[in-house]
Length: 290
Ligand code: GUN
Image 1 (spheres, rainbow, N blue to C red):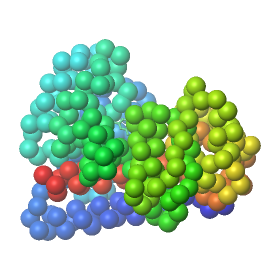
Image 2 (tube, protein in one colour; image 1 turned 45 degrees about the horizontal axis):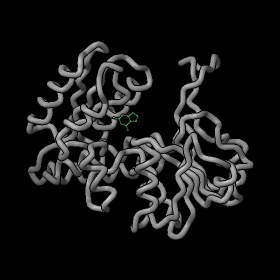
Image 3 (cartoon, rainbow, N blue to C red; image 1 turned 30 degrees about the vertical axis):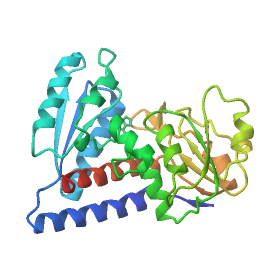
Image 4 (tube, helix red, strand yellow; image 1 turned 90 degrees about the vertical axis):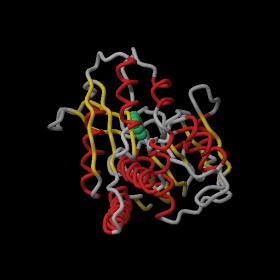
């Protein structure tokens, strides 16, 4: 069993981004600039956005954090995004999800300028991805593909099972794994809460992507010997032994599943780190492709 180490791969992607950013600046180009919008005080969202801003600094980008109160109305948030859309110095806009219930995430995603949609959630970006056209790929699926590429994991002709069909991870990763590309060319089965015999389907998989958000869901008897297991779960569970009061748990019962795998991602230290690296790559592209 080999660990798919998010620390190593994300650092390698960040190094590439940093070098490209330095070259860009030396040649008189503009410094990539990411605007992150955080609404309210959700603890997990605060942590993610802080990491994204810190990572921008590490690679030489400019970042702007726009903090808004939990009770802002939809029109107020629309006005903020329209201003960022019109601001020529801003290359990428990221609105951290989830949003408070008075705001339609769909409406907000729709008004982000597609050229600044570094999260890849806009219908235009998703449509282009489905058609195999160059576009922004959602950060977590993109990070997973970068990880498979880094470890040169053979995907062509393999049976990939994706558990979860969210717009952010499950659905886009199923499209990427199935597309005519490398990595890609998998035969993909997408499982979800209504799937019958989920365990039976998983146990036929060469590659499993667990993205359902239930800690420890994937058990050893659901995994074929030699499978590649990608754990996208990042649930906070109470843990009094930790200073923060919680531990981060993945969707995979790691200790039981790992011995059966050829490759597996740890949590933390796996896919989560790749998400940020992929976002930086999208932001760099947003800056250079204007
Ligand atoms: N919430 C959970 N994952 C993501 C992500 O990749 N981007 C944004 N904007 N919000 C998220």
